[in-house]
Length: 422
Ligand code: GLC
Ligand code: MG
Image 1 (cartoon, rainbow, N blue to C red):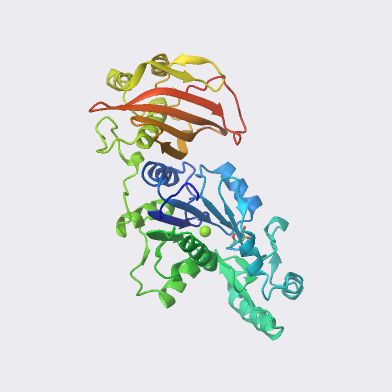
Image 2 (cartoon, rainbow, N blue to C red):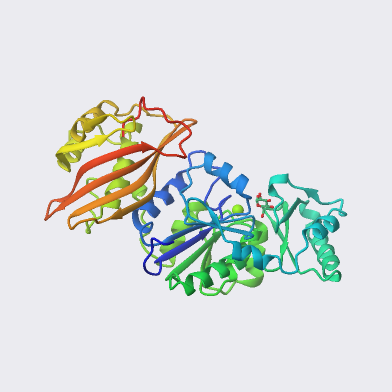
């Protein structure tokens, strides 16, 4: 958050499973559309927050399976764990407040007496979250009985039913909604209260997100029955909450447009980049567009035309250098020539490219440094490079690529130099 010097323009607080991530879409298209929109138009002045029911263990697993961006803030275990930045620094202050009227041992013991409740995996049992599976038909009754029992013992707990199967027991002050309220308060004291906040969800544990004042909300089209029921009973007349027509991340993009929160055209929805000239020269846009072009080129989705390579060459400096992750230095223009050979080599294959954490800084007037992580998914294999691009801007000529340097990202499991083009 330190990188923001003023209040964020937009803060998106999104659930992951069946909201940001569509588990029914093996191509991850709506997620990839969201990713390029975020990196293109929001990363530099906005905040991305993931709020998931998953524990840190399962969250990290999902990151390996799906092309998720790196959020600024990660809220896990149904609002009971908040962490900041890439290194996921925990918010100890939040943990302290959750200890109030909470007795983990007692909660486990009492809930364990219900034969209808089946304990979830060990990874999902957290200091402030005890989780079970329970049949839909029994959920309401069990919830009622459990709350009565806890109340009698002076324990203030919250019981949440999600996805028609999961039952979580948390401290009363916890949950996704309370975690968001805490975060907003914290941002406000730092003078960084977001101009707009959009909460996105699909299931029971997301309901609370939609009752936080001044927050826009979107229930994605595929929202669960329990969330729609909650909405009908509690928030039907709130114009700030919509039920999107589109699934998952597509619904988030739809809500950005509906509430007029900023640009809502993903670069992935633009078919011809040569025609897509942005009014303001922005080096971050340039990089997002280039890597999208690169994906389409290799998938054979753009025409194998001289016009493209000529345009790329025209915007790269004649003496421009590319430092390959292997350490080899090449000329930028030679690299573009090399790219010509690879047109369509990934046609019909599971090949995707995305940029993460695209941030531009203007060091000296007319010079820009863009840093990003460039990821490439090729079938089951994923490789990523931390990429630095130096641009110069000349009056009326737009941006010129001067220098590109790549090193294998620490998170990249595979660090194979061969067949890595750029
Ligand atoms: C995630 C968690 C699980 C929890 C569910 C609903 O699936 O892994 O423990 O019960 O979200 O909150
Ligand atoms: Mg969900």
